[in-house]
Length: 52
Image (cartoon, rainbow, N blue to C red; front, side):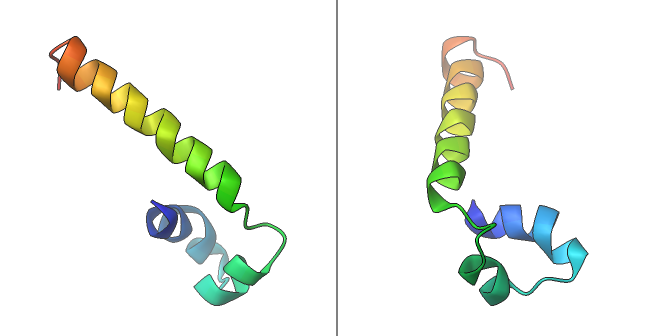
């Protein structure tokens, strides 16, 4: 998920992955929270509601 976020949001601004990870803009806790929130949404939609 971190790499997907980088490619979608950071790379278009011309910032290298290493520079982003070493910058104060990189927040691994926030990225982990976003990933978990997305995972729960996918589980709810796909498994419990039986939707795609």
